[in-house]
Amino acid sequence: MPKIYNFGAGPAKLPEEVYEIIRNELTDYEGTGISLLETSHRSQTYMKLNTEVQEVVRRLLNVPANYKVLFLPAGGQGEFAAVPLNLMSRTGTADYVVTGAWSEKAAKEAKKYGKVNLVVPPTNRYTGVPDQSTWNLDPNASYVHICTNETIHGVEFNFIPDTKGVPLVADMSSNFMSRKVDVSKFGVIYGGAQKNIGTSGVALVIVREDLLNQAMPICPSILDWTQTAKNDSILNTPPMFAIYIMGRVLQWIERKGGLDAMAEAAEKKSSLIYNIIEGSNGFYYAPVAKNSRSRMNIPFRIGSSGGNETLEKEFLKGAEAMGLIQLKGHRSVGGIRASTYNAVTLEEVQKLAQYMKDFYAKHKDLI
Image 1 (cartoon, rainbow, N blue to C red):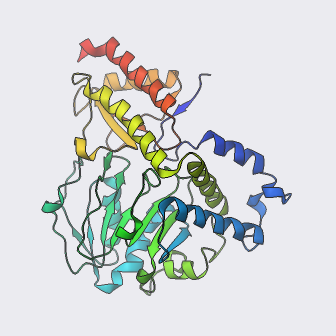
Image 2 (image 1 turned 45 degrees about the vertical axis):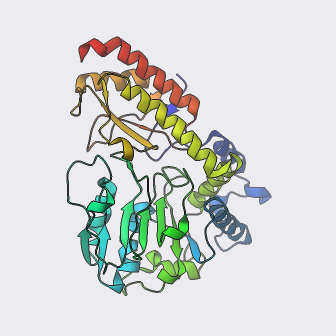
């Protein structure tokens, strides 16, 4: 079997060093003689870990003291409901900037709890972030919601919007911890861990303290940020193992040079693929505008915007034979997608890049 190069969009590749740590600690966590999987969430052992993971989040993102770091169940999609349930009570309305499938899902969920204003006109083609001068923001909104990186469509924000004092809420599920972020510019930052900072089962939420104590009466306790904060994210038995893995991944990021190092690597890896696309004379086609192209998720087609499905199937089959796996585009858009998260190494991306060059050289006359 060939060496595996995993370009999956999520659950995504974890760093090899983290796998080694998990293997070593799985049945004897930090000398306790038992696994964390069978450790009480009320024990000093777990409470110490709970604090350690919060602290590494604060260090990496330089989280201000007036923000809470929370761990919640149900992943990023659970927060699609938690956001309006915790924030929309102030005015009963919220602004959503829909730039791809995930922000579209978030807006749809929010409509269950209040009025949703779509800041940019609805579309079925997501190819970039519209210039903010075209946005229709509601000054009465309880918050403005964005998705900073759309995993399916490969659209990434390259700026922090000016929301004129209305709290900015950001779903960062797929570019969390890939670069430095000024947390003070946001009211809430959240994301599921399984794309770039861990495995499935937990959402990381960073919320400014003045936005607590506003949850709707119908908000389930398990999604209530205020109750979660008061109980230090141990309101019930939390997804302990997922939080543990997230902590080990974040500690790995810290050891590797922090977010500056992650950002530099992300730029190198994504540029390597985009440069091949741009230099292919139209053989490879990237649908996203250059100023909105994701550094984490790179969707592309072969032949044109619609894609040559025969060649794309051959590309994917050949890639898998070489151990380059999980490159198939999302079922809703088709094509090919390479995810180059923090744990994906430059050497692995170079392997994909060489395959793309070789495939182009062999098939360029067919387009």
